[in-house]
Length: 189
Image (cartoon, rainbow, N blue to C red):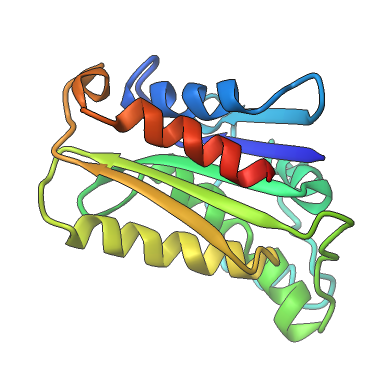
């Protein structure tokens, strides 16, 4: 099984990365092919809404997204981990999602859906943020859901943690790491 992971946090060794590491610990990398992208380290331009992908389903911008497109096409499981900033996914996560407009064109305009593969495609969304209101989680999840459905991930699990702000604060959460580990187990079952 091919498992694709996105770390959408700019904070090195922060709460998002700690949760994602726990998910990865639950996945036996000897049995599965895993690819992890730290989105903050990649050179990805924002979508220019140029229409270049409308006739082909392929983005005309040549940057690090070309690696991600191929990874998405071949993945059986897709995991997106992001902090919540201002009731939304991080800019790093959102810029990657916006560049998946080419998949939207391919699927909805050109009527070519990404194949589900032999394991069917599933997703996992990990959200963590300092605010205590659920509206941040709901807004971020709505964007992620649109992303997942566009890339032919028909279902996903969401785990979210609110009121977790300082670097490493997830380590003090009563069940944060345990929930992330279980979500990792769930996605490969």
